[in-house]
Structure formats: structure tokens, C-alpha cells
Image (cartoon, rainbow, N blue to C red; front, side, top):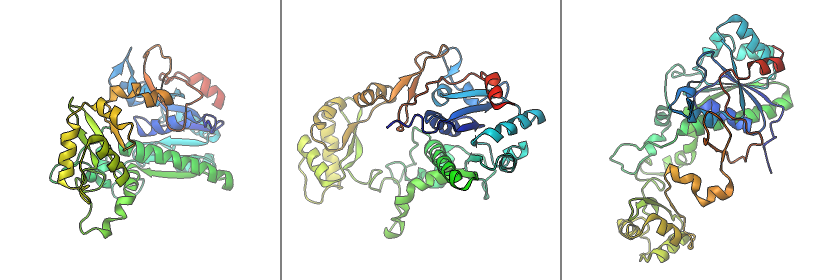
Length: 372
């Protein structure tokens, strides 16, 4: 079933910039919502200036701003602020990712929006939440993960530093995705009550929520789980990453006995009962996996259904057979950045494939539609 028209008719005003907010509104746009990106005149979304591709177009900007239209408005100007509020009267959702209090000072916060439109859903994404002692503190993904406990669980050496992930977990998983869920729930609730809502999405809390199962065992353990000691971060040999003969890596996730047994059979390992997590097994796996290339292991182990897969580098991912068959990657024609890869979400291929907008490209069109 396609969800490409699920939000058809829903109007979104997007005041956010950089990554969490734009990724969220891209999801809404892929689902059929009409997303208008409201940007500061002259500069616009800061992501536009990230390391460019093509004739000055940033690949990072292009990849998370498809299916949107752009208008420029200076919300510090009284007339422009009034224009935005009149647009909000006709809109369903406003998304912003300023520090708490900024939209209130600009005169476009929850109080002003709900006064104009009691059905509006206002989603505020911030690092530490709209209230509390950290509401005004600056931060980035690494800081949110640190305070959430996620960073402390990352890495395999209990005596070494935490490991950094290659993707913004708090920004995307903790902010954008929880924000999208909250907006959809608020729209359903509004259809029942007739009233909108102000959504307070803390990226720190969003990341912390991902540790729910870990906190569930804190009081059952003699010592709290930490990096390098848990089931999923290097504490057991059957769930780890091993180097292959060509200097690449193989992921081994043979947690259950049946998967470990199949891996042992395929690799010619001799297992002793109860030895799944001991150093002997790790030594065996390290030695045996180092005897073949990564791709050789991938071919051999694919026939044994044992939860082992090659660790792909970023430039290898688009060409992998799974992703090609599933149609994960696609392109949107763009004269400024031909060949920029787009990644569909698990919700399916968007029906509309509008390239990311140029700054203020749709001023006349959007203002006419909103009658402002």
C-alpha cells in the first residue's frame, strides 16, 4: 500500500533549518503534505551553504528538502510577521527548531498561532526541551547523546572512550522521527477535539527513549551496563564485527543458538557448550574470518541463514543488490546538481518528486494561494 497521498490536503509551514526539522518536513512532504519552507531573505536555510555540489548547490540540502516550496519572509518585520500569521490561519502544521523562546519573541509562537487558528499543530524541536534548566543551552547531536546515556553505551572498550556514530542519532531518530509521530497523532486528536496542540520535542529525550530496554535491566544487574560489556556492544563474541583478509569487515549477529550453530558449521568452528561468549570463541572467529575476504564470506554465509552480513562503506550502499531490488535510491532532475542521490524512507516512494527549492522560488505562487 502506498502512503504517498496519505497527507494530501495537509498544509505545513516549515520554519526549521539544518537537519532535524527539514528531515521531518521531508517525511510529511513524501506523504503528500504541502510543505512551504519559510526562509530568511538573503541567506535562507544554513544547510544551503554546506560543502557544495554542482553549481553551488549543497548535496546535503538537496537530499532533505525535496517536495517543498520556498518563500522568503523577514519575521522581524511587522508586515511580514502579519503575513505569516495570516498564512498560519489557513495552515494545519507549523514546524520550528529555534531555541526555546525565539518564536515567542518574534511574535509567531504558540500563543500567537493558536489565537489565529485553534486547530493549528505547532511542533517545536529543541535540544533539551521547552522547559527545564537546559532550555536555553546550546548543543549538538553529540551533546544530546551524551546526556541521554546513548554515547556512554557506544564503543567496545570499557576502559576506552565512547565511540561516535556516523549519523546524527538524536537529530534524526530523537527529533525528526518523534516529531513526525507527534504531528500525526496531534492531527488525529484534532479531528476528534477540534483543537490543535503545541508539541515539545526534546532531541535528548528522543534519544534517551531508545534506551528503554537498557533501563529496564539496570536494577537487575549487579553493575549497570556500559560500553564493551553489554550483549550488543562488544560484550559477547557472537555479536561483533570482525576484520576480513582484505582489510574490510563482517558483521556477526548470531545471538541465538541456532544462528551460532549455523555460523560454526559454515566456518568450521568447534564450539564447546556454554562457550558462546568466552575469549576462545572470539579468538576462533577472529582467526577464521581473517582467512577470507569480506565478499567471500558474504557469499558463503548467505547460504546458511546465520545473521552475518558485510559491513558496507557508504559508497557501496547504493549498488548493493538488496537496495537496488527494493528501489531505495532515486534521483530528481536538477540542473544545478545532476546525479544527487535521494533516499526514500521506509514509508515508500513519494509520488511527488519535486527537487529541493531555490531560495524564495515560490514567493509569488504561495502568497497567491494563501491570499496574503
